[in-house]
Amino acid sequence: MRRHLRLFVTAARFDLIEHARNRLATVPVALFIPSWISLAHAVIPSRTVAFRLRATGRLLEPAGNQITQITGALNAVTLITGFMMFTVTFNGGRFDRRLAMAGYPRIHLVLAKTTSLTLASGTIAAYATAVICATWSPRQPVQLAAALFCGAMTYGALGVVFGSLLRREVEGMFALVMTSLVDVGLQSPLASGGTKSAAVQLLPTYGTMQAATAAGFTHTSLPGDLGVQLLWFAGAALLGLLAFCRRTRNALTTRPPFRLPWPLRQRQPARPAGATSASR
Image 1: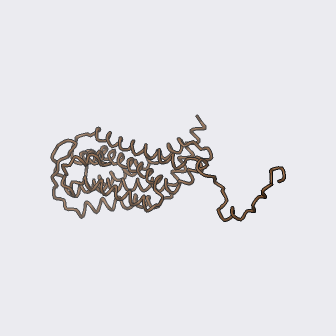
Image 2: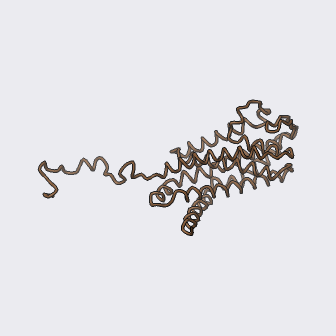
Image 3: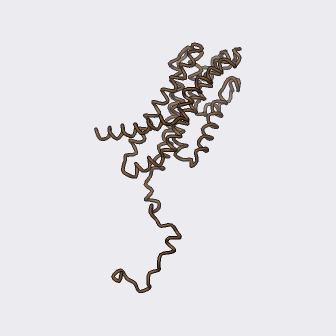
């Protein structure tokens, strides 16, 4: 038991150090989230926007800048968490592969990534919720933070999938940005007017959007929608686990690691026709 705990703590420490060194994510967390949420509150008109919340069927009329803050916070939280996990997985892929080839248990590496994702998602979600509460008072701040946390966990798992499967960093960045823009954009009441299409229920952050909106403007709890969002996380985490195991598999099963380059092999002298192992 102590050995497994030591292996897990070591892997978790490596992941947390990598996150701390990732300025591409830490700077947006500190600056982008409060800037975007504050600008949305100051620039977007405060006139009411009428739409029907699909989860409850209730007609809501929140202020436009307030609903924009919720959708903007969701977009920022998911993107930042996805970037963090993608960058750590993409840049640390070779290191993880060497550890796995040296006999380091994959389960401890996966648990360490899950732990770092949970800590990062909880911190970012709480921070975004605090920034929103600084400008107005959501009806259920705890549910709002929980909704943002579940959305961040989902996109963090997607970041692991993209980081394990894609070969170039720009491909992962583009995939995350486009996924989040389409996902949140189609659900935004300000942009779509509360679409009636059932297709939005298939989007990755549908449960988060419903629970976050209800938390902001109603006293209705939506544990079912949070559960749906956790199912999205479980599915993305399973894909991330399979992709991670595929990436860290033993390279010796596919090709010799120290094979001579083709020109050097051609320069080797040919063995005489009658040579045997004894003559050598």
